[in-house]
Image (cartoon, rainbow, N blue to C red; front, side, top):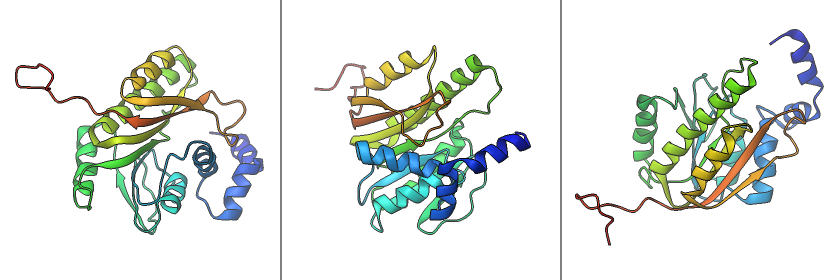
Amino acid sequence: MGKNWFLEKKKEPWYRKAKREGYRARSAFKLQQIQERHEILRTGDTVIDLGAAPGGWSQVAKELVGPAGRVIGVDLANIAPMEGVQFVRGDMTKQETMDEVLRLLAKGAKGTRVDAVISDMSPQITGNYTMDQANSVFLCQHAVAFARKVLDAGGRLLVKVFEGEDYPEFRDDLKKSFHTVKPYNPPASRKQSSEIYLVATGFKPARPTTPSGAAAT
């Protein structure tokens, strides 16, 4: 990204506000605004933050869950240490990264069960919107697959996705696993952005099956 983009970024009110208030990224205010509308995180929650770098969402998540809660952030990029938050550096589309997160979770009081998964993952932008949108959905699908493995019944999921051709199918698939799925565009999002956040609540774990494949009764 060029010098002009960086200069424009520095002029943004949310960027300046983040600097003043000690948040690592303007995205911290997106999570705060989503929280105000949907209460996605609660005191004492165990939370997985996907696409966590540079740590803005993890900061807000830790504030919301409090000392009794737990936050684990995951990103391809290295993230500077943060008090009260554990970070895993890795690719959440790879099994080895998911396994590392599960190992870390298993050391906690709740084991590998979590209350919420939040994902601000974004693809590398190519400038080809069709490709970028498809890659966004691809990342979201991995976030959902992981959430389905670890969420407790009634758990919550928040994912950022780019609107486009693949969006309706992804949204409808999400509805299969949650009681409610609502789109939300927080005020801190850039006006020209095509991103939207899906807030999914009331996780419905898949019914166990018998060895024959029939649904258990």
